[in-house]
Image 1: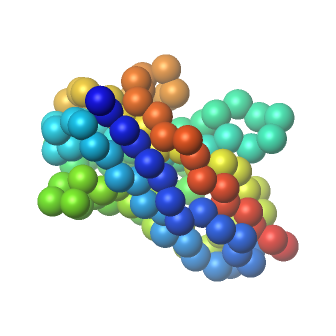
Image 2: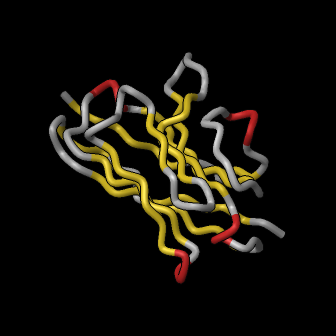
Image 3: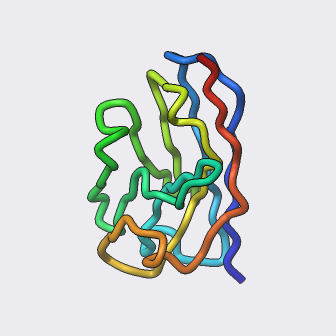
Length: 123
């Protein structure tokens, strides 16, 4: 049974930093493509960053240069380092996993999802 669990969300001031973590179990982590998504109230879920099983990354334009996705295969853990946070980054952040060797940073591509973690950036 695949389980995906996010952690690390919090309230932070604009300009601050947070690191989100996502632990995945029940799957061969190093063979999976992983992604971070977010959903703000009243908005559709959007892709933030993704990494395929070869380590190739992709970012939404809105977070390029501020967010970094990485993974530790030994710990089955995915990270999202978020720097220079802005109020518009406020959302519930979700981790997602898919058995694939490539990445499409769209919600429909991913089969396994966590419950989400709240990130709130105060101005």
